[in-house]
Image 1 (cartoon, rainbow, N blue to C red):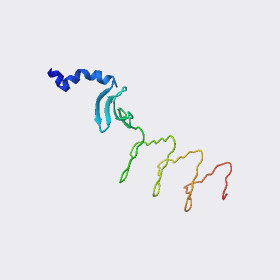
Image 2: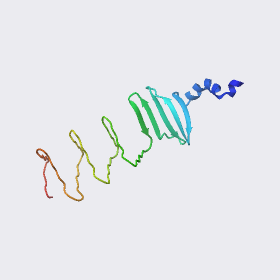
Image 3: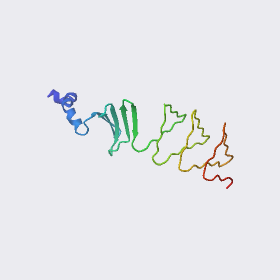
Image 4: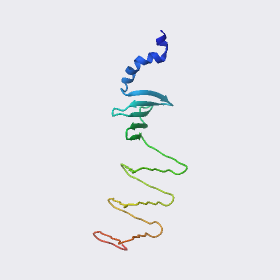
Length: 151
């Protein structure tokens, strides 16, 4: 009878069966303010921390892999910082499926020690107020089917 009244002892034999029904890899499930935080073993190694809301959606997943953590946000992510926001990495790769907008209330400065390459179906460069300047240390080359000036 004492084994049944002690929650730790009664859960130990049942735990693998209870966790194996919803997810064979679940290590721990913690209720958090209308959400559930689940810690699981990943099939390929590592672990997964999964936050699930009451509707069954997963707004946040963190995969702990040998290459480092992977943060997955289910619907959207907003980052608000009062001060500076800095990223430091060997490479930064941003991929947007539908579009990408960069906006600034001040200047935009892009510096590269190497080349600056830009490719698109069409380029539009507009100065809403002031000049467009093109400075080069060497030749300025313009190639096109037709070069139209003052059109």
